[in-house]
Length: 422
Image (tube, rainbow, N blue to C red; front, side):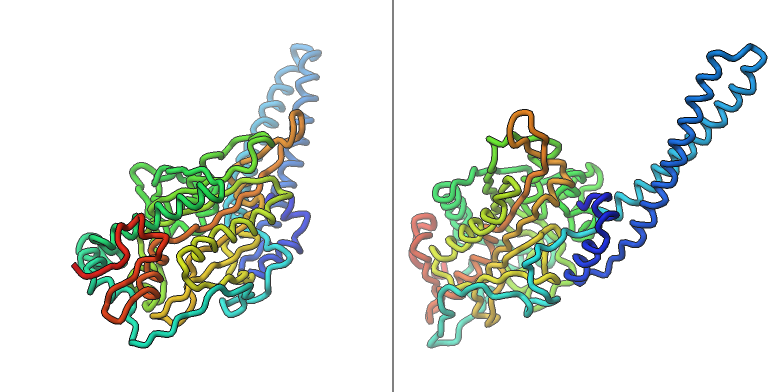
């Protein structure tokens, strides 16, 4: 969250950030409320000074002088109370307005509003050419008996699916494989956090109030279903001061994520591409500010490594201002090739949030004993979205006879080299 003093002292920086994001928000209301707050605080502090003088006078006043002084003191205290209420009301409004302001983009973020303006960083692998008419993964999954969309709709409604047999095993295999690579090769600590989180945790991670309509809520308990493991991982260290020796903190977490995904294009919601419930392995790091962009590059290679081991063609794109996530200062999308759509589809987004989440969740570190505590930088990224990775495997590894070859690295987890109808 942006600091109020920063907004007031650097309004042009904030306006430029909103312009680059193609965000129509206006900070004039924030500046107006901040000016009102300053004026009320000045008046309140002046009354406190007057009150102190009246109290001093009471100490030496004669008995006949006390009644008017007591009356004056009560009137001043009443005025102070009214001013405190007005200040509190303005501060509540300011807090809400500040929570809606997105992170300031890094200077190197490309200009642009749409995905076409993202900057392609590099490609890996070549999209396959089939000597037969390839099927989309939802048709393949139905024929193989591993994806049951009808039962998912029957149980929970649209955009839910049931995975059966080798489909369920392949999903589980991908989760285990991704966690094993990230913990054994990349040095992350595996975490299995709660799947439900408090409102304060959602707000700290940048999900609320901006994306409340996209979240599933359990109103009776004031809890939200986890929209991404990044949220509870931010919450693990909320309101804490870490020592410099504890950094960096590197977590890899599998969770089932829940999102309403309102307004998605119909074509992109088929099969496993955009579900209300999906599995994801999340990478999350807390680091010193001076190292966060080095860490961003490292996390990008960690996500790419999974696709390389699976031998899935992909590309990396640096997101333009208009596509930048709300809490990110800079972000990259890793996009796997999807034959059914004849395009690359996001399977991971790697973001450096700098101190944005740390300020909202109050996460600091002390570089050394006795030093002033500073806000940490947080970074997150999918490593990877499991359902989309599975969809890419089904489509890219499909054979003319309707079977699907299992990638070599997954065979020990799946227990077979070929997915066949059973």
